[in-house]
Image (cartoon, rainbow, N blue to C red; front, side, top):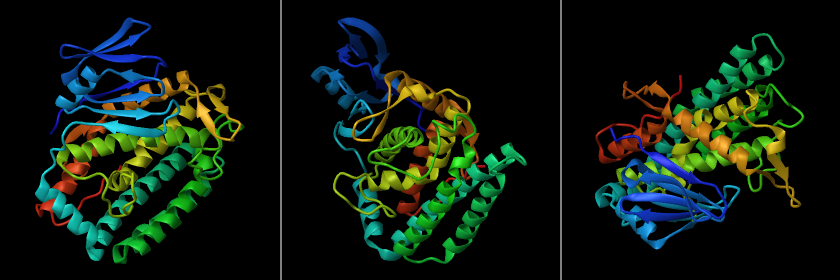
Length: 343
């Protein structure tokens, strides 16, 4: 299994990333704030007004470390990486599967089964923690609806029908999501999913976590030689990493929603860390983003037993494990793609 490497997030505005031998150096106002050996990094993510020197970019490219640029508030802008080293035979198998209706439906079905099962696990865990408290019945009702969807999915043979069931499940899941929020309900509430832009604090937190997760899943797919742009559930669209969005769906309940709920319910993030702009979009301040980044990285260090591989691995390796299993399936080593089921 590939060694779990770190993602370096640079959020300090005006920071400059430079090269010193085989080390990446982060400088702020000409003062070295951080030095990281390149061999310990998997990727570098720069938020807002952060510059990277050409020698540092070259070192990252030579070492297989992708450099991503996001706005200060987490919207993806660009990604710089070295030569693509993907297996051409594997990618051709991926493209053929994406062009095959039955093959795409099977893959989309597997991904959505993982997503729905893990969303249901979030609701059931929330209901157990709440006991007989308010909202428990609504969470159990939504979990039952998701259970029905899981029963319907195996018989579905078209991608459009899979998308329809996924949409129904998402409405039931997010319809009960507000009941999972236990504190500061005046500041942290959830009425509906809003994306571009997020219109409330909870949506802003979720969108930021999803951005981090998509970045990690994309990197994992590229590592095993797959094309992150060509998906099965999410179809081709210029600039959209369709396959990364596919695999993110099954990991999102654990590394997105559940982590967001933990941050809010434990009051690790607070209302004053969020601001509403004139356009109505909600953004996080620098301190809150750093809190979320630390929590995300910490969660990735936790260990769990992979349900299919039956071996312990850090949560941060789940994206790589699923990418590897997908590659094995497309090569013909596995009869089907085994989605990740969180227990």
